[in-house]
Image (cartoon, rainbow, N blue to C red; front, top):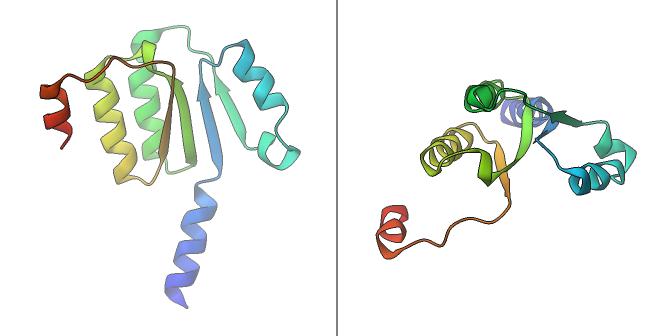
Length: 112
């Protein structure tokens, strides 16, 4: 019973969804979500892109966010990998928006 209560509590903590720098299309998609999901969405419109990595790290470590959606273009590949690892360790999903560069064979081997 204790494990069940613990998993329910952890699930309740991961309540919010964070969208970083959503564009107009994404904002419209958020507005069309059902009310139960829309009430859980927070949008972050950063003015200083230099602080965005630290802000996302704090959000992940807070254990309040179920999913964080952000564009790939605002972070370097090294920053993306660091955030992905931190998110994995804290049971947070990172959803990347936008295209990414094709992986060359060295990058693919690094991921394996």
